[in-house]
Image (cartoon, rainbow, N blue to C red; front, top):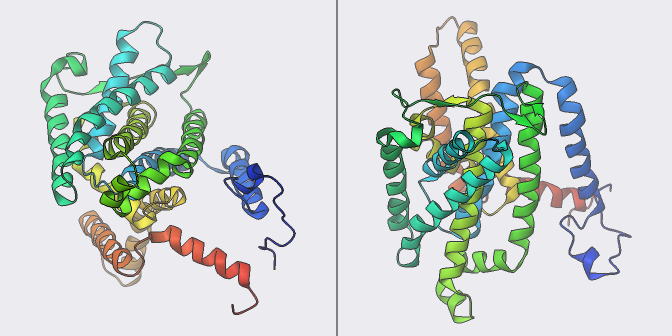
Length: 358
């Protein structure tokens, strides 16, 4: 009885087109954001910031970017890790080669460079799709892996191939504590999530979804495939590039090309599939699941083994993690293709009808 629209009348088009038209949803999101800003810093410790919260925020941003391309536009990509690497290395070069470069500007310029790379590797989508497009984007992964390992200028002539950043500051305030890094990533995530939500609700989002559902019919009604597909690659790459820069600058601090290998690409694709294709909320669900599950298994499996008198090694835990991911992907593709986001929507619909059966 608490989750109803009774009495919530819309008197203007602006009210009718709100992101959250139901007041309970608006208050729920405001409370959640308020808890993230006020409650989390008071309750979380350093381990939780470094191991869970900061990776969750950055990977959620990357998952939103990939979801725009795969979930909303229907263009499969297996090179997301490479585009994260482009954003990280481009931001690194801007940051160290330009004196006085603000870290936010460097990160955004890294996203802009990733946009160019995404458009270049998105050009094949104008002619091919499906598995062939996935292979074309996979080529980006191998190409950029080679480039960041072999072209020494990109790593500032580093002999080991490892680059690092330090002394990050924002408006004169150093970003070195876990809480400061958390707020820095949270600000990026909230801003980009709001932009993504408004994009997919606008005319460009409807063009993406029309191309996803049936590209021939979309072109017949006047949607330009070149603009729709390349704009999806551009926006998605920008989001992923910014996430890659945050991953390198804030989470890792020091990294090499292997930090953005093909495993990262598959990890992000798993987030989108498990969380929900074509859902901004699903990107958060998928990122939370992927980040928390390994930590949960590392804690739970040894305890279960100790209870039964069996020693469970780290290799078995890693293999169990992969098996669970694979099983869940098959489960969601068969039973619920729209992932955890759809289960969340079904739960809200049931709540709106409760206690009545229909």
